[in-house]
Each structure stands twice: as C-alpha cells, then as structure tokens.
Image (cartoon, rainbow, N blue to C red):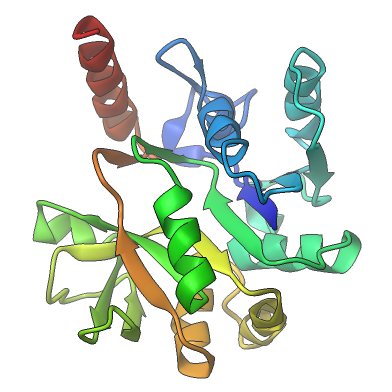
Length: 246
C-alpha cells in the first residue's frame, strides 16, 4: 500500500501564515501538521511509500523539513505550479503522482490540512474486508456541512450518493479527505479531470461511487479541517487542552 498526502495548495485563506510556507507546515501543538499525518501513516505496516505532493513555490520547504527527520519512505513531489491560479487541484495532483511515479499498489489519500485524533487502522481493516473506503466525520452544525459534502449510505454503509458542497445538506455526516482506494479505481481520476473537475477531491469520490463500491466509516474523536484561522485556533485549543490533561 502507498500513500499520497495532498499538499499542493497555496493556503490563501490562512494568510499571512502561508505566504512563505505551505499550510501543512503550520505548527499545531509544537510541530507541523504534516508530521502528525506521517506518524499516523507510519503506524500502518502495509504502507511502503509516502508521496507528499507540493508545488514549485513550497516544495523546498518540505525538502528542508524532511532533511531533519528520520523518515526514509517519503518522496516530495513538485507538481510544477507556482501560483494559486495555475494549481492542478486535488484530483490533478493525484493524477500527477499516478502519471509520474510508480503507483502500483492500493493507495491511502490524505488532505494535508486534515488534523484528527483517531488512528487509520480501522479504516484500513475495513478496506481489506470490503474495498474502497472513505472516512467520515459527524459535524455538529448542519450549516458547516455546506462547505464539505453530503452523502447517503445503505444499511451496509455503502455510499449510494455523494454531493460535493451541497446547497441543502440532509444530514450532518460528511466525508473527510481521507480515502483508501484500490489501485484499479485510480484510473477514474483522469476521467474526472477531463470532465473539468480537477480541483476538488470530493468530485472524484462523487464520480467513483457511480463506478465502483465505496464504503464509509466514521472517525473516532476530534477532526479539524484546518483551512481557516478559526479552525487552526480550535485545533490548537484542543491539543493544548488534551496535553494539559496528561
């Protein structure tokens, strides 16, 4: 199994913190977000390689960070873009890795701004039993779900319908950008790009659930999508509170 961490964005909503550094390198609880993700991935025995997809503006920041770490299974990928306007998008970056690197195994895909408490092992176990898996989160505020996605599942937790950025969400359950996909399902990323939807990873899942079975499984504990200063503060407050209780 291989892993792809999507870190090719420009973090414009987090300015000025992301003017000279990518979003996943923002410090939370004393270390960069990317480090939490790598540590969680390295606890999964099946994972052989981790690809961190960045861009021409920020890839050197990841390279410099990696030089000081004892992570032997990480490759920093430069997708060649320089600005938010010419970015490849999440699906575009997935396809970039597929086309330019030896992706020949099943894949865990993580958004680089995910910050969560739970292990990934339960999701991996479900993948081995059923196939494609997306990891879910129960959002307390229905209004916030409009910024994520909405999905419907059957009694076996198979995803029957998936809508990215819903105008009228019907439930508070939504998918995070944590996917575990069969290698054979990755070929559909190119179809999504050709349809003009390269930017949002959720559009890949919306398309894929029409072509292949996908199952949902919930995260335990806290989850933050650190795309805004407000979410960053909430994550910081949570981890400080957690550390104070130790």
